Amino acid sequence: MTDISPLDQARILSEALPHMQQYDEETIVIKYGGHAMGDEETAKNFARDIVLLEQTAINPVVVHGGGPQIATMLKRLGIQSEFAAGLRITDAATIEIVEMVLAGSVNKQIVGYINEAGGKAVGLSGKDANMVKASKTTRTIIDPGSNIEKAIDLGFVGDPEKVDLTLLNQLIGYELIPVLAPLATSKEGQTLNVNADTFAGAVAGALKAKRLLLLTDVPGVLDKSKKLIPQLSVKDARKLIADGTISGGMIPKVETCIYALEQGVEGVVIIDGKMQHAVLLELFTNTGTGTLIHK
Image (cartoon, rainbow, N blue to C red; front, side, top):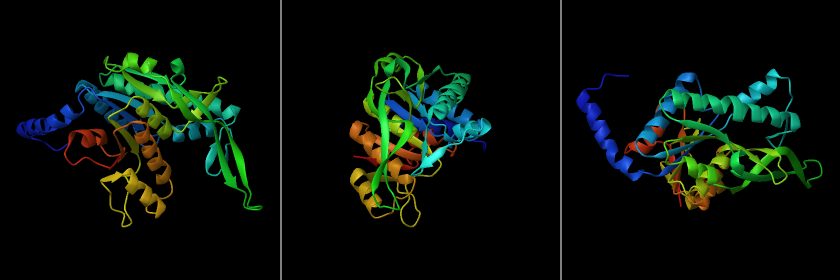
């Protein structure tokens, strides 16, 4: 870090005041992707930033993914994954590993880093206290041979249906930081793996969060000339999907943002989680970072 004079440090803190007031006592859901976690140093910096939010009377709720970590563990155990339409089919052997990695190692690692930074993190999954109920995801693909649309069974993969806030309401506002693994239970009591972005959108919507921050490995939504778009309305976002400006893996991310806004979140921001202090830059500075999507 470059040496900043004490006066500059004081000025920076002072400039953050109106932003802190804007988010005072508000809930902010932060989706921390498996790719955004990066190395230990990045994860520890992220944890410090989360503790800082909590110290400034903001209520952070962390939802994490763990795709790369799951892939590594499946490989180590020699479990082959099948894919259909680009989505991993989660069979009984796979869901066991998914749960072990998400609710076990990844979740507790983040909890550990936040606690080490002076916070009080509580690691949970959507299964705890029936927080998130989900229904099995079905996807259809067009069979290239016959051109007939057919349903594919993705196995133990779910879409959130209902969020019960009983448990989160016991934690939020009491200096406790919930860290949630994106697992849910079906009506039949099966464990389902939920896409972490979608899970974060459902939880943020139920909490009527002021902001949902999606930390990814891209700077945000880019225009045709690859320049960052600082903010978008839902209408604009839909136009950009229709004309192909938003394409590939960014489409489901933006669709998650739209879904979260429809659920009651005030604003959703896609930001580059690998950027140092991305969360603080977004919330506490005039410039912000990434792309804000609003109604």
